[in-house]
Length: 478
Image (cartoon, rainbow, N blue to C red; front, side, top):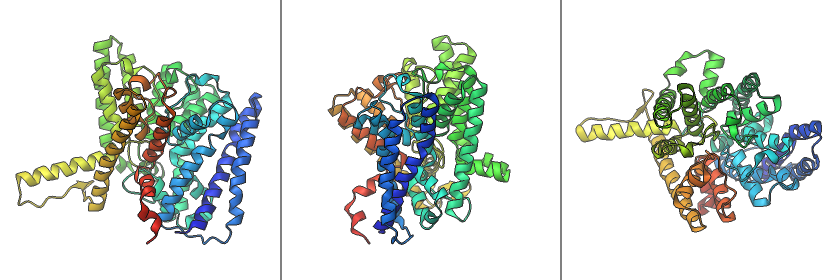
């Protein structure tokens, strides 16, 4: 393990976070708001970044364990440092700040704020920017702009980018990172323009575009997207859906004009689940809540896409929907979006692969002599990929249930604890009961907040990157 190089990368990450606060500082200056919280935060980050000059002798090479350690510690450090403006501004304590910032970076969208509209606009801008940075990955951004991280950068990318497989778009990892960030930024700009065209001002359009493309869900309004026009809600649903799709497919479609992306089995499953579930819920809302066609379908499509992509925006209080519809949304939380997207959950591709495995097992039971292997997109699924998908599902459920036990022990009712655990580990944000779409996480005991903070980070990094840090073998070397 190259500990000196690990320190060098982490110090640069601290400096990068300080630099990323400049736009929020500019917003504060233009609006006449307090600059001191951002200045103090930036100075703190830059001070830690000074370690860079003390690690010049580090060998520029990273291995698998280095990538895991950098990503695990890097995300823990980033969630603390990025919350400093909230602490220095007097808006949150340390635990609440860590929870809120971790929720932002992991694009969960769970909040402890009972009234988000009292925060200065510069603080709200930084809160949204945190989600945007975390959506594609702060360390992936570092790889894109810091050339020396190209050596061993694949190890960081493997540990940070969600999905059962991590493919390079081009041979160089740094170039892959730049392409991903370029597509991400381009679609974000299109989203800003769409929001502005539907009635939002530039600042709120930017805030919500950041949160939409990151599938994060932080809004500048207490009523979330319900505070804006129906057109803004439809645009938001569209861009949430795009953000929940694999960015490799975006690249193939935009750069190579490859229409074959529409044959991708994961995309087809993602689209099918979204449309079928939305139409079913829309019809149910028309029948059971007497909503007109447009309103019912807007509420259905918006909330289904928001939950499945783990964004967490809301345009209706689905806690008031019939319980069976809420249970459907909970199931969508578990599934999540596509691999290689900014969405959370266990990912659609894993659901597809587990389904293929189930069909294979049933075939073997019916025809024992037949040689049958699970396939994906016409190719046999490698055993290690299938094993990883299955163990991911098992660990996901185990960590969620363990979290439920702890949350009920600190005073939460079972339904709220179950919902909060699932919403945080899947990086969704809102759940049902006391953590529903119009509620928040402020009332939870500090111990519960700390637990949920860790589960949010673990969920964003797909559990293994965090869990492996607790195994003694990881620290013992080869």
